[in-house]
Image (cartoon, rainbow, N blue to C red):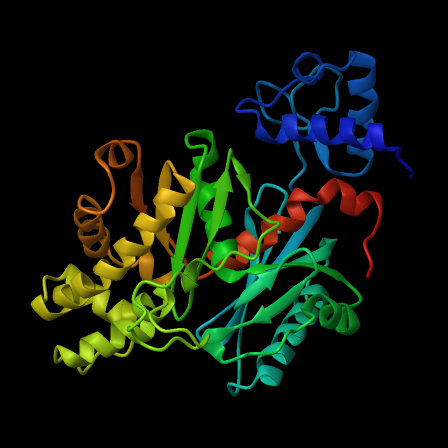
Length: 387
């Protein structure tokens, strides 16, 4: 099935209308909304039905009927997307339908810390997800990878928290092992995508910064409602203190070095919290009112608020989300950061800014990665991608 460029644009406009409208739209509504004739919209809709992307439903019962003029929705039963994300020595995989609902999950622990072990576990897990289901899979994976990612070319440039200094052509490696294309993004960025879509934040805020905090630190930036994908963002390597702790990237005092899990555990040890083994343990104690744990989070909130103030002055976001495994683990940290921010940005900036805690689940990052192929579903079915 071949499409010229104008037809592709029209198809995408119709699909976006079906997908984003609060109420399932009819052909007539779509025609008015996107500025096409009803004949053109009907032609496009029939093509999409043939591709199993959309279906018509009965307005009253919700049953599939297939009558012209009835509301249109995505078809959740046919096409699915695979997403994967790495955290805490394991790869987490999901299979989601076109409505971004999780159908299957899989966790594959990594034996060993080597780059080879981590990447081979990814390839094994992707092949398992493909072979273990009879559902139809979109011909591309979404990968939430560690480190600094070049999403355009599919590279991991480096992953400082894993001490990876070499460039990894991950898209090529996945293709060589699975014969399947992949969209590569940072794992905390994919976490942010899942969070922002789930909460429908783009309908309420134009400029959003999602800051994912875990063993490393990275995030997602939305400007004018669109995800910034053409930049190798290094939010975790804003230098807060040139005399601060050495970061794995080689600089001193990076934000990541001062607020990542290693910093949490180091401060906890200084304060006598010797039984904790993770940042989540510290958060749990702080939520219970443990003074040392609260003091630990208070210390973390200082460089974190300094980094956020720089981000606010540069990007002027309407919303900041503290997410990732650690950012979303503590209401106390959010409270402390808000207090610190009162002295770090101007009053009008604070008045126009909302700071919230994320809601990161175990598979959130993998779900966010799976959403990337969903965004490209029409073009993926139009022409199977290759490298």
